[in-house]
Amino acid sequence: MWKKLLPQEYLFFELFDEAADYAVEAAKLLLQMMERYGDADLLAREIEAVEHACDEVTHKTMDRLNKSFITPIDREDIHAFIVKLDDVVDLIQAAANRLAFFKIDKPTPHAMNLAKQVLRGCEKLKDAVQGMHSSEHYETVMRDCIAINEVENAADDILRDALAHLFATEKDPIKVIKWKDIYETLERVTDSCEDVANVMQDIIVKMT
Picture 1: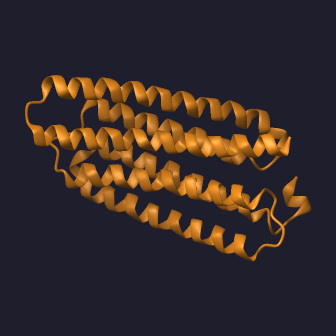
Picture 2: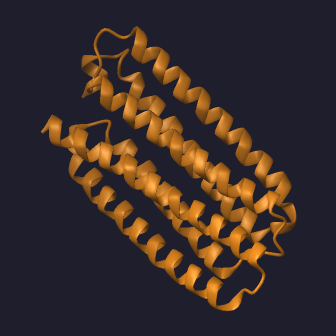
C-alpha cells in the first residue's frame, strides 16, 4: 500500500525490517553462546558487530526522517519504532557481554531458558514488523504482538524462578550478584520486545 503511494518514504519499513533481522541474528548468537560457552568471547564479538550494524540502520532511519517531508506514519512513531528496535539489540549485546566478562563456569538452565524466550520474542517481533508493510496484515500483527506479550510474561516467570533458586542455593555473594545481573538483563530484552510491540499497536490504532 505505502510503496505505491510513497515509494521513497516506504523505505522506512525496509529499514525497520533490517533492524528486526539484526535482532533475530543477535538472539540466535546469544543462544549459541549459551550452548557453546567455550566460544563465549568469539560470539560476544559477533554480537557486538551485529549491534554496530543495527546502530547504522538506526542512524540511516534518523537521517531519512530528518530529510523527509512526508512520512507514511507519524514522525514520532518512526522515531520510537527504530529506537526501541535498536534497544532490543543493545540489550542482547549487554547480556552477551555479561556472560563473557563475568567468566561464569557455564550457563544455567534458567539462563538457557531465558535466551530461548529472547529468540522467540525476536522472531515474533520480526514477523510483526514485516506485517506493518500493509494494513491488510494488521490483524496478524496484533496477534504477533499478543504473542510477544506472552513471551515477556514467560520470561518474567523464568526470572522469578531463577532468582528464587539463586538466593536459595548460591552461597557466594559475588556469584549471586553476577547471576542476578545476567538474569535481569536477559529478561529486559523481552521487555524491550514488548515495547516495540506497543509502538506497533499504537500505530495500528491510529491507522484504522
